[in-house]
Image 1 (cartoon, rainbow, N blue to C red):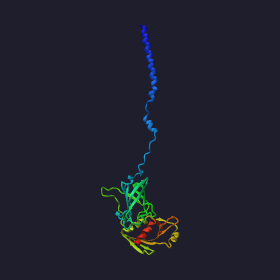
Image 2: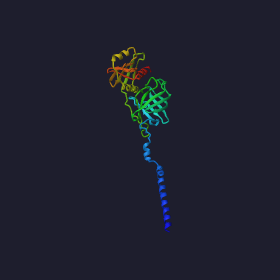
Image 3: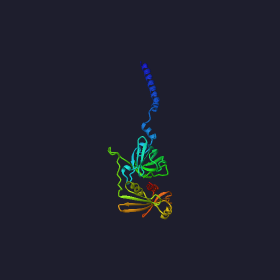
Length: 288
């Protein structure tokens, strides 16, 4: 009996020894199958950069109506730009005696808005040469007119760097547009040194001229300007404001300080300059 017990005990010891060896050999395989920590994995992988909230990389960011408020002009005659969700636009420009329209498609590249012209309903003012019109997105979701692909950058009363303000919906009453002050008390008399003669301007027509006069910048070297004026066409302009008058001599010139042709205004307060479009606009008024 004792002999059998010894044999059983020996068999049990052998079984226990084999079990211990088997468990030690399986542990490395179990450790290799443990999945990696998801948190440590996400930290090591690079994350894509999110675009800034104010990026204007898509058309919907600029869809809306914009208005350039011209002093002395009725709100219904303000230059306006309408951009539609389907990528189309309608650009209404004030051409002094009437309103003209550009229509076509548009695209946005960063802060530049490019209008591609498909149709124009007026002649003159370089309309036939304008195929693209450029704006830039400014602060407050407004737009700045930057010019076009033709030599003449001004379109009627619209000049480069004019600010077109984005309009807000007004409880179903159309778009909010601030009214410009009337200039009924102002008159302007133009006299040309050519065969165009003279003309008196009153009412709404004075607004665009006064608006352009507000953008004057001073020039240097008066003698140089006078020399350039000799032999060139010039316009004498008198601005009457409730009994007070301002006298100007207006002519095209190319001052060395600028290097390109501009409108030069020489008056009691010295010489100033503005875009060449002012002289062309006044010349056009005298011709019409």
